[in-house]
Length: 309
Image 1 (cartoon, rainbow, N blue to C red):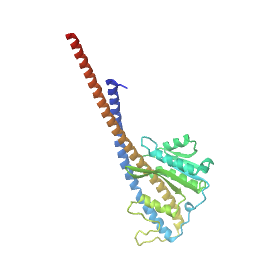
Image 2 (tube, rainbow, N blue to C red):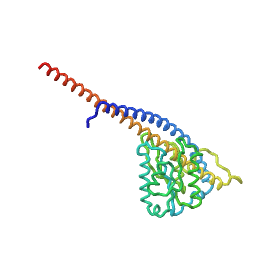
Image 3 (tube, helix red, strand yellow):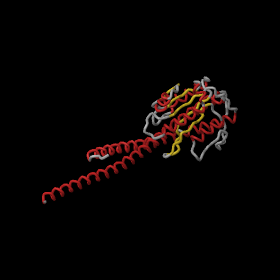
């Protein structure tokens, strides 16, 4: 289809404006991504120290707590962590595809109404409603740099459900931040806790070079002496829920960092495509313009030759 010079110029102007917008969004996403990474790193030391304390407590007493209680999975809770906004590539779709695979594996629970869905993020909540899934709780607007106070209601809801035996297990589906160029949709079993999960928490929040285990001694010579209060049971009652809250907080921070990284890459690709399309349109514009000039020259030459004859 042939375009006029006016149509091509209009498309060039539109593509140029779009490229300017996507470059601005790329810069904003890059800034938010760096900030989200810093916040995620700042949340690590607390979890590591809490795990070291738990390790010393476990050396003095047997770990018995309602969060460690293993029950047959007759009813489960699934938390779907997505973004509130779009324009972040396939980030949300990867989580939703994993959610569909999980739903297929637990079809009996989903169809029998034995699965409660907790949606963290507008995108996942909208998807679950369209698919006809019931949503037990919905959270939005947690923020780009979520604080522990903002993420605490999410983890507290899971803790209350498990303690009241309204669910026998809790799973979280989210996007794990690996690097700026790579994010991976993963599913983690949040509750009940196990010794392996506690070690996984330490490995997940600590640096790659340091992965303490539950029984690992940090090298210091001191030990805890339990007086009348707090008792080991009271320490566990305070420490284990705190670890769950820190883990949920870390998951939200990982998701936020993944979202901003994916959006930055998506906007960079959009900017590159806009620049490439603008170049193609400019080439087309020059060709059409040159063809018009050539046609006009041919008409002038033909007219002059007719007059001479």
